[in-house]
Each structure stands twice: as C-alpha cells, then as structure tokens.
Image (spheres, rainbow, N blue to C red):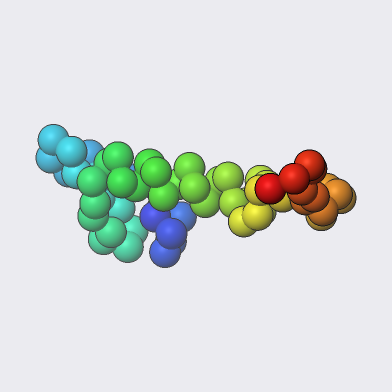
Amino acid sequence: MPDVCGGKLSPNGYRLMMCPTCGLEGDRDAIAVKNLLRKHQRDVGTSSVHPESPPMTRRGKG
C-alpha cells in the first residue's frame, strides 16, 4: 500500500510492485518493510518506552 494514496499494488515485473492509482513503483520487499514500520508506529507509537515506565536507574558501583 503506497503512503501517498493507500491504493492496492499490482505486480510489475519480478520484484517490482506498482500502484495503478498514483503510479508509485518500488521493490516489493522495501514497500513491505515500510508498511510494517508504519503499522508498528501506528500501533505502539514511535517510542519503545511507555510513559508509565519508571525512569532508568543505575544499580551498584560503576
């Protein structure tokens, strides 16, 4: 799914995908990674630390 229009990608060669709506063309794996990253950021946000987490502390010496 392209960032630009949210359209459906179609195969356009061995490793390429293309959106007929906006014309985006790219490697299928690169597009998949971008989609997974966008889904992760939407689901958990951009930070991996939850606001309710206690602050980090240092135990013991050095």
